View 1 (cartoon, one colour):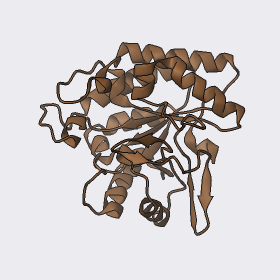
View 2 (cartoon, one colour):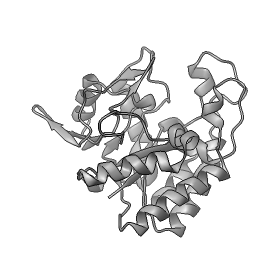
View 3 (cartoon, rainbow, N blue to C red):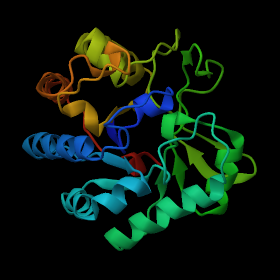
Amino acid sequence: MISITIDCEEWNSPYLRGRHDIDNFNTQFSYDGNTQLLKLFSKHNVHATFFITGYYAEQHPSDVLRIFKAGHEIACHGYEHHYRNRKFNLAEDVMKGKKIIEKIIGTKIVGFRAPQVQYSLRLLEVLDSLGFTYDSSLHPAYLPGYYNNRTFPIKPHSFPYLKIKEIPVAVYPFTRLPIVWMFMRNLGVWWTQRAVNKLCRRGINPVLYFHSWEFVSMKSDNVSFLFTRNTGVRFVNMLEKFIVINKKKGRKFGKVKELI
């Protein structure tokens, strides 16, 4: 089974790089992207997992409910989409986002992914104490200047003294090269598909992550062109091609919580 996951958040990529941008903290990009995604998922009967920030949920509670009623899993993405190089109370941020989302959908959420996939033991301890069933913040890849997680497992795993389970994001099995979001957009469907085939042959269910805003046409002078290249309709078509290829191979698409 393949799990498509969507990080739904406020656009703040320029802000995270110290750039002033009129669109910093814009949530409309993600709202419009979700509209395209829901159409695509409905067309192909795919159920995904949406990791949503509390900030986004406050601005668009009806969208969170729209996603939930369409049969997708709603999970937590913290409250504010800024975890890297920021001093803040982690437990408070997680709990704030969790409470906002649960109030909207009227049910308990069990999954979490940290903004900027900022995986750490401290994060797992906090999530475990707050009753989360799984985390999917581990991207076991090497991204210079961001993180080096090449020595971490690529399969779902648990911990001796924690109840929570870790569901890592998919990467190439041996080289640990990333295959999600901008990498698929810039390198092509073949790049991601090749890795998915390798993972499936090893009995690993690939968990792929994208961002809602990637599915609307984005332009910005304050981020690398890699962030905005092939966004919008082009990326919708790429994801549809990926879904069709894997359905023909007999693979199913499901929510992350179904992997536990």
